[in-house]
Length: 329
Image (cartoon, rainbow, N blue to C red; front, side, top):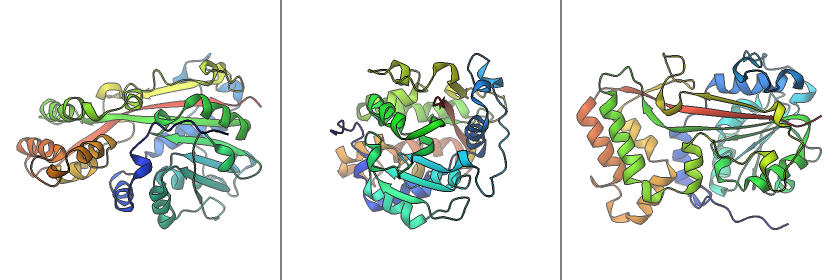
């Protein structure tokens, strides 16, 4: 089978030091996100129908990690897993788990960090493509496919066809992304800090963005869904689809904090975190003579924010969208 040309030219070519930095400075996703995914998966299909308002379609209080895992929590597949942060967190609820990523350096980093499932088995780490899952999935298929901040890089028509082939009936596909970085609005200088962050993301780095990143920044509004793919994949009924969005454009959904939680960081922390972005990587590849100098794009942004907050810390978070799909049993 011919694999479609990948749209991600950066992460898959990461060096081992870059993959390690990604592991260190990109934390795991929040426990509430994993709770939403597991709650949907545990809900009978008729209860998760989007004919009811998505926010009330099911309880987001997750079950305790099963011991031993129940049959429909037998096998997890986490695609675009990077260094494996979300794989390790979700694997605790499954008997078997596989993390797959097209980057050899990311998988080597994930293997070094390890990971265990709820039954104590080692997480399996594989170099593999979302568009060629027969090379990734162990015999017998999987119960859940998760994709964190990576689906926008996929050839979605190929992915949906492949997912249909390896996901067991009644299984779940969960896709999510976290869009942009926002200063918590409670900070007295939040508008100015946000202006500097937006200047970096939307002006300085704009020439180094790619169309898939726009899909992510726009909360997967235009991400191809299975029934709209060509050809359509009808095994995932639209009636069982749930979309949940929190803190869109930095406006706090609960008025208190970001759904994924806010992280209190220093300017130095911010600089390290921003340095893992693919747009920054491409900017630095285009301007190698400026890397490590005061003219580095991230260093300049950090310097402007340092003028605002000094050596103090400030809270940041992101907007989140979660798409949940159930395969017809």
